[in-house]
Length: 243
Image (tube, rainbow, N blue to C red; front, side):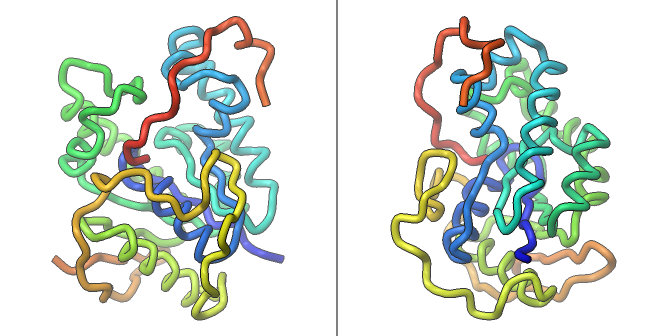
């Protein structure tokens, strides 16, 4: 039975971009929990926050993650705050191999500073908010992680290769995954290999990585619609900034 691959990390860490590319390389179905929530409600996440508050959104998020993690052989990118609920952490840890894409708050700020679809960053000082979120959540991501990848500023391809290498070493996927499947259907409206933004990561670097250490190994690069919301008007098309 195929093991799920689940990506966690703060907003802007590249979970959606890397996860979609990993899914394509493995020929697997890709899901993004935030995109699933938007597809089911018919509105963007900021609208859900506006009408239901963060608690309402977190409840929807928990239901979505519970359902998605019960599937088999998928690649799942979770929302940055998914780890705040103990039930989500348990479902994530027990139902898949978990990759924590870890990035420093400064890099995250550079990637997300123009993104208006992140309610938690609509503050006077989003950079300070990212610092706070990192301090609050880093330990929770580590608690869930099978291994940790320090993203630094490598290319998407480099990060994808790091993830695949770790999955191969753990015996989760076979060595030398086959060529990408053309036209692979994914749940969030695009092919699994589509990159969401060039701004997500820096230009290509070498693909060599350090060996993992500890229980959660660290890899370091060199240098449907819910009735409750039917009355809420749909928002514009999805943005293309990093997830």
